[in-house]
Length: 117
Image (cartoon, rainbow, N blue to C red; front, side, top):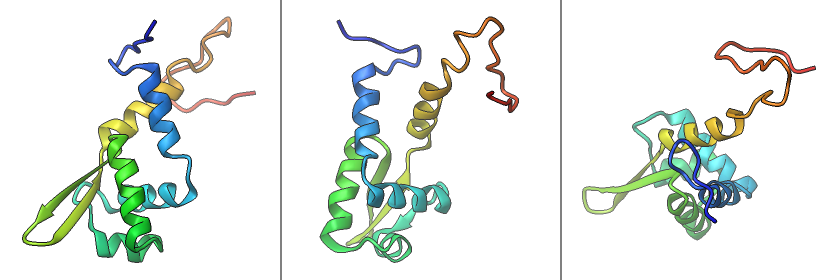
């Protein structure tokens, strides 16, 4: 039976997306794109900032794009820009926090920061 989460994602999709983040280099690439903002970066700039270049960067971008975490598009003849998919990042974060403190007698999950102890 396929488990569907309240946001419409399946548990299998979430697991696949987290698996795509199972590389230090992919996390660095994603972090650089998050830092760059919605405009994204050219592949060259992304490579410079992340220290991941060439076919390795292409490989990691394919995995992140397949997981829905980044978008790529051509601009002009050959410049490829990359941008993070903030909606998917927020969905991952929401998935992790959706059950915060659910088993406590008094749930603590609020939009305000709280202590876990």
